[in-house]
Length: 135
Image (cartoon, rainbow, N blue to C red; front, side, top):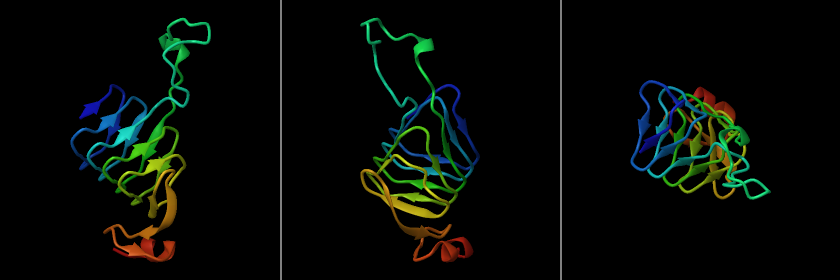
């Protein structure tokens, strides 16, 4: 596991093996991060500038990411910077998250797409109302 400087991690968070959490990521309380999850923090990654010179620290723009309380991120997922993963959302294994995920949202695929909702207990339900009211 790699946790960079400047990362914020809440209480009761479970981070599995081989996870990379880079600067600019905030993980709130009670989040599950499965094995091999990778967070990014640069929307335009380059090693050099257009003139061939090596990029310096001031050439880099940090893009922050927020993982809200109770979310679960499945193994081998990539979280592209600049997104918010909502409270109690669930990310299916191997997903590439490129857009915000709503509270209780269930997303899968590359790019990840909303396919339904889950309760705080992780049970799949048909509607947001069921998810927000269920346990």
